[in-house]
Image (cartoon, rainbow, N blue to C red; front, top):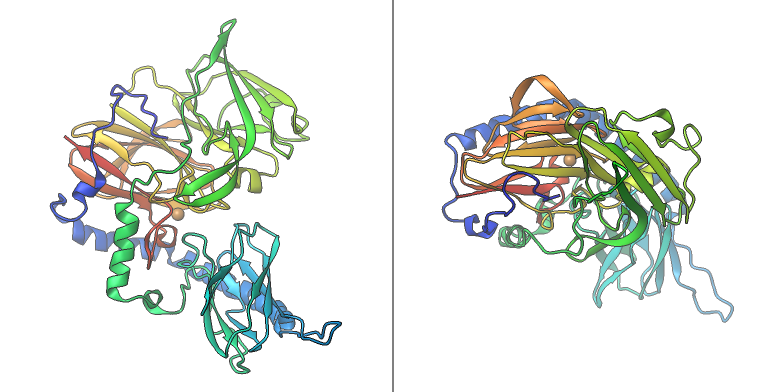
Length: 486
Ligand SMILES: [Cu+2]
């Protein structure tokens, strides 16, 4: 992202911090409008919330029943007669720790066998009197053991230390030496939170945590995705080389996740073409898995459609595959992504924007923003707030945002302070462009929206499913800002 292909090549020099507290310009009536839209968003999402909560309870009951069967700590005598560590089974998932009250005996070492049943990576941390004891990252379907020292009877805090997961409800209590409270103490699951209002923090602690995450924006991290890929031109054909490879990707400061990438970045490089171009995409597979590329929304010959065992054999590790076609679609925003083991491969970042450029752009700046959710967390262009990149504009600019969703969830993207104009969907120009403040982007959809930057300031731009963006510790995930400077 943040590749400026419009007329202006430099971003305005502006720090979002300068507007953090004092003289932030506020559009008239913004507060009232915010409360109205929050209400409307609630009623629109209410049926889905009920469904989600219902499904969550069902899943939790099932998980708890299974966990309860194996949750009783077992202490086996070892060969020399001393007690071996007590073993306790724990399940982590998106986004719960089961059981919510973990029973363990006092005065003996305990080993927590942690199994990850969710699609995202998790970890487990326990606050002991001697400090925090935690596992490393536990990938989907993997297990890890956490060895705890002998503890005195009491209650100890347990949580997932991956950024944002505690806020999503991944907390539990380790009850040592207590026979009571054998059932789940709360209702863990998505959006349930910790069961403690405000995560047990004081007002001052909450304010400080919010401030720290916000003033860190835009935080510096390794790697920047979505850079424009320059083609070689061979015999009138634009040739793009991409390498599928596994890298360690910094999603937010210090949060490093195994990513599957094109050319080492999430999203992969932008492929930009014109209608009528003949293009060749050469894929080298250096992943430990087979893969393919599907050109999403792009009209291609059947043999270039990228579906394994339907239109091609998978590209095995070490192999190369060539896609070639003529661009016949109208100017607009399209995608390319893996079509092999795609829950994992696309979830870990194997996607990029495919843009058919306008001959005469009617805007001054443009940005592509690819939404993601899954093993990398909730991301905009492979990064989580405060590591997301701001969108910058000069006062009066027309800014085109190319928004697309490569995640598994709907994300209603909302821009503060502006009504944006929706120009195109899935690459096709709309006959009747329309104004919106919030745009629900379903998995696989792309939208081109135009903002006329007529109000100075730092304007938050974020997903409006609130558990994707803000918790007791402040903002995370799918949050960035449109920064309008003179
Ligand atoms: Cu979202």
